Amino acid sequence: MNKPLSEDPQFRQLLAMAKAPVTRRTALAGVSATAAALALAACAPGGAKKTLTPAKDLSATEKVVVWDNWAYYMDGESDGTFPTLHAFEKKTGIKYTYNVNVDDNNTYFARVKNQLASGQDIGADTVCLTDWIVSRFITSGYLQPLQYDLLPNVTANENDAFKTTFGSFDPGRKYSLSWKGIIAGIGYHKKRYKELTGKDAPTSFDDVFENEALKGHVEVLSEMRDTLGVIMMAKGVDITSFTKTDFENAIDFFKEKVADGWIRGIKGNAYVDDFKSGDAVAGIVWAGDIVGANAELGSDELGLVLLDSGSTFACDNYIIPMGSPHAANAHALIDYYYDPAVAAELALAGVNYVTPVNGAKEIVAAKNPALASNTLMFPTADDFATKLHAFRPLTPAEDNDFSKLWSDAANGVV
Image (cartoon, rainbow, N blue to C red):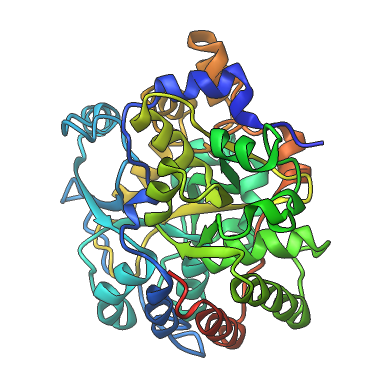
């Protein structure tokens, strides 16, 4: 039986540690079913891999690096102090520019697609984007291959799960490295869930999607891979190797639940407010949002469950575009954040996402044992092996076809 993680003292400790009421995923403000058209428009950037050449590396003479990232992903972001980045600059002599420039994978791509396609500088030496769009960039030949001789910390400390299981879209991690991991599971409003169902917490997918008491009170994510990934796994499908029929069956299930009024909304950021108010009682959510929402509420009114049938796991990943003029400096930055002490400092500072760096947990444990025991930040080996699964990479044709099916199914659901 699944254990409601929010009942754990470790979960409550994480809430107490949270310093910002908004999380990386809540930066996706305004993303709803209407964004499906944008996602579809930004699908497979091209068929055959383009032949581009890495830009001349000026790192030896220009000691600078520009990093584009999502909001709420860095220590000291709220006041602009960036302690770990400041330490990087002092250690290496490389001056950093840290830009919170990514609000959504598709909108970021839309801004830089012309430069990417021509191998020109996009204005960032490295950027962190999510698995599926990184896969598109690799297929399109937009990225510089990594130089592992410049990445000793990565070689020594990368968690094998991020290298293999959660790096299948980039075999051998030739073009990308994980920045942080993101979990999607079943979220619920504790008081309202108890009132409607008589149970303290959901323990299965069916507790949310087959209990008549929740009809009209369920919301799901606008991210296709998370919502349909959780649905497919609940139906016994391995999302690392699903077929077109498996995907279509999940779409049919989703459409049925929309048609009968079960699902009240498919949303990005907006679902958080619905859960906080109790208008949405249960559904498929991002773990980081639950932490942030509870921190904002000053309580732990919302809960999260990792399903035995499976929860999705994705990463935001460092990449170095072909046009980056400071690739060696970007490598130095990436390698710095694979130092366990630095990764631990981020976790202790309230960056509440899963680290890919071995050794960070042990350092955190020495300073905050409860935080190190929290499986939302430090999943166990069993969690990685049995509960957290990555949506398999799609071919360009599948990406286009599946995104259209999802867009059609989600159309009009707000």
